[in-house]
Amino acid sequence: MGVEEKSQAMSPQTPSKERLRLWLRMLRVTRQVEAELREKLRVQFDSTLPRFDVLAALYRHAEGLKMNELSRQLMVSNGNVTGIVSRLVEDGYIDRIAIEGDRRATRVCLTELGRAAFAEMAEAHEVWVNELLDGVTEEDAHHMGELLHRLPAEPGAAR
Image 1 (cartoon, rainbow, N blue to C red):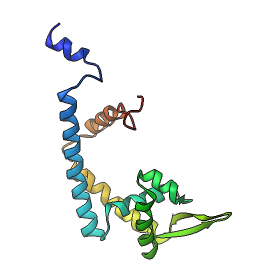
Image 2: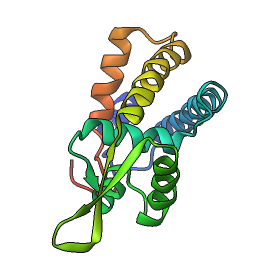
Image 3: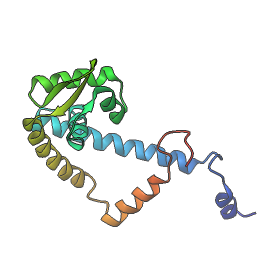
Image 4: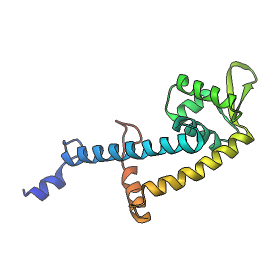
């Protein structure tokens, strides 16, 4: 069996230097892009990436979300979300709404101010991402997206 045949016969469970290199490259690029986005959000909007993520999740759910649903959407603990939501409530971007019949649960939703602020941030965010990834063509971005969809959504999950 030649080298070419051996590499093609390698199963997903076989250790691969190429997969390791790919992981490291994806991690490096993600960290670089994320650092740039954090800085731009801070400078232009006096905001943070976690605040942006909370606003984005609520923007997609006009009816609002329960706090535990929001945590699940963002894949973070309830404690992480609570502090961010409290500050966004103070800033007038989010309202807390009591859920009838459940004294402990609240639903959070964007205010008009929050919706407008997020729309402005999202527009800038899209421009920044396009600038940061300007070396990637539309076709390449689509192809890379398709390749990444082959990966399991959760580590250890079936494909």
